[in-house]
Amino acid sequence: MHQKKILAAAALAVAAAFTLTACSSDSGSDKSPPVTDVSAEAKTKAATVLDTPFTKPDMVLTDTHGKKYDLIKQTKGKAMLIYFGYTHCPDICPLTMGNLAVAKKALPKAEQDKVEIVFVTTDPEQDTPAALGTWLKSMDPSFVGLTGNFSTIQAGARQIGIGIDAPKKGKDGKTVSMHGAQVIAFSPKTDKGYLLYGDDASVEDYTKDLPKIIKGENP
Amino acid sequence: MRRGATALAIAAVTGLALAGCSGSGGSSSKPELKVADAYMPKPVGDGEMAAGYVTVRNSGGTADKLTSVTSTLSDDITMHVTKDQKMEQVSSLPVPAKGELDLERGGNHLMFMGLKKQPEIGEKVAVELHFEKADPIKVELPVKETTYNPKNS
Image 1 (cartoon, each protein chain N blue to C red):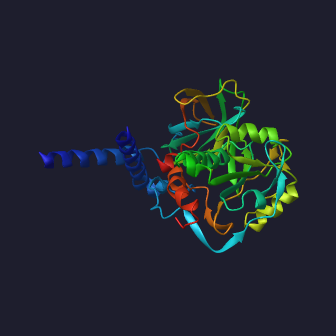
Image 2: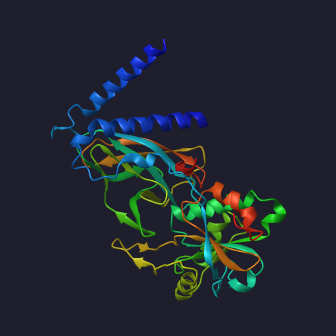
Image 3: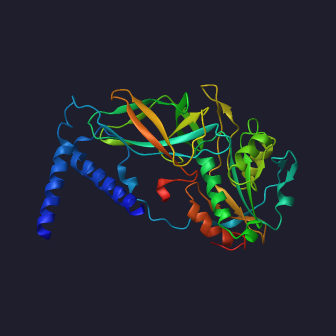
């Protein structure tokens, strides 16, 4: 199965290469980027260790049960990974949270309780506690989902270097929201945000790194 | 024996190269489209929406555009590009001549709204891609796990 995939990929890469070499002279008008991203770039570590760790954002929001949630107080002394996104996002938000869900389940049961995965909505108007709850539960019922005042959420995100804009009505009348670019991991030892993951971090990356994160170590 | 195989391979390569270029310079050539790498990650939540991904390769010398997508799964399928962490709906996506339209996680994608049923892993979602110039192409999107990303597998 796996081998077949590799073969197919190789065949495609070869085919792509032929097309390119064969026709490079007459593709002057072709502004599309070359097909070279077929070849995976050599992957270094997914996590960026921050020289100056972030202080945990001072955010008091509402969780999926409609209860007040004080981020600093309630995640104190625990490893915590935080991501900003919205549920009406079919692409990267479920991928990121799904990756974290799979990685967390791979930990031994006792270790799973040592890490909190927190999802903060960037679209609080549409993401009510109930909507957030339904969305997160299908990935991992232990995930914390937070909603509240957009300006509180935006200020909190900014404290850890994540820029988000308020949702806007698009041309088609549908809301255009945005997700954060990174997942930030907080150490249980210092309560500081010390690792940063881009949206290309995979299940394997998180699975490999979580056991270190719950000890506050660098992956 | 081994030399024979090499010769054969070279012949095949030459053949491909020739075939690849025939007619590509002429303005009369048409878009020649092929679809690959189609999939739909299993949607999360109550299945309100799902994303779909395909790669459309154009071996023809004329550019085309993906203009709409239809499926029995949803009557509301739109095309989106992702710019600066924001999704933006577009009315078409370009399929360049001698190039490809690549929909991928974190980038351009199809968005299915108001799903008529919850797609389950292992099922296939039948979709028809409509283009500005080329004939529509029917493609089946296998439903994969939520975290599926061909880039990482």
